[in-house]
Length: 422
Image 1: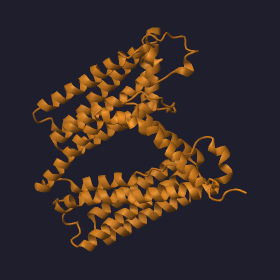
Image 2: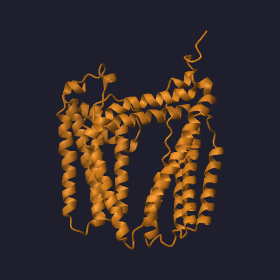
Image 3: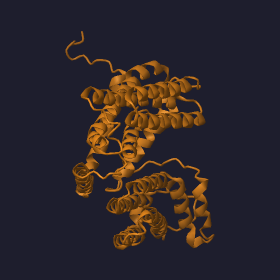
Image 4: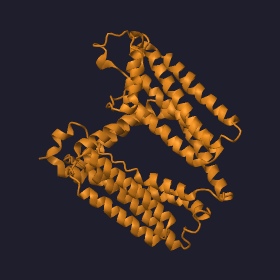
């Protein structure tokens, strides 16, 4: 007879998810010490100290025209729309777990959705609590700010509830059958969050809460009218794979680790640049690296980062902040470009009659071209609003960015051992 004390309990789907989450953390944790050793933590600390000093400066001397309404809406918007959902699903699960779809929903995804909604509400509350002193002090929003503690609590609760609803709306968006429908629902959700945040921060609370409720109801109704999967297996598996690749890509900035092959994107609006590479055997690796970069995930992350830095620079209206944004943007953007040096072409090695000589030089040339172009364009975006002021700091920042992306990073990439890369 089996010993009831030592008898092993049957594993459920909830245990399966916890085991995969634990395995993912065990896989990633050993690499984090390299991140700490690289000085990245010190960079984050320096950025945090700078932001804290700027925050204290605004509290001590609030400018009359400081755009607290725009800043507040942007902060609430970005805090709310982030709706991660870790399913830990893998491609083989569509074979082995498909018969247990109901169990996967109840034991795996619904708890993850509740956790995401809770964290989204807490994250939005924290952002609002930090922003509230500036919101009440700034002349632009002083009249719209609540005057009683109960009104402050009601406003915070409304923002938190709307952030939690955003997680539900994002789940309905994931379930949409059509990719076009998903994009339309995402645009509607983001628009609703943006308008609701603007209304709650600038209009009377009751009127704004009613508007936010109507916006949420409209987006939810549109999602219900859209054909949906009960459980979007392919979408969740693709998202899980993308999260894993992003983690490996980030850790790859600090230590050489194996990466997974990312899917290729079309990007016809930019991929044509690679076709301008001369049709010569000497430039074959240049063409291959340029095409891989422009259609891969590295370029997607790079251009989104540069676009974010450009938007921040346009709305900052401060020379010191814009210079700092430009320098930080180019440092991080340059690190993203070095991802190109870790690309493997193992699946093509036996069919492409190319010598491995010159691979690193070709990769460094692509990194140099992309880095110099981004440094020049982002510098123009950040500098133009301050063109009338003294250009000294701007010229120094441009020189540093050009040296970083046009000389130091390509030089380090070209100097790597060719055999190690193969």
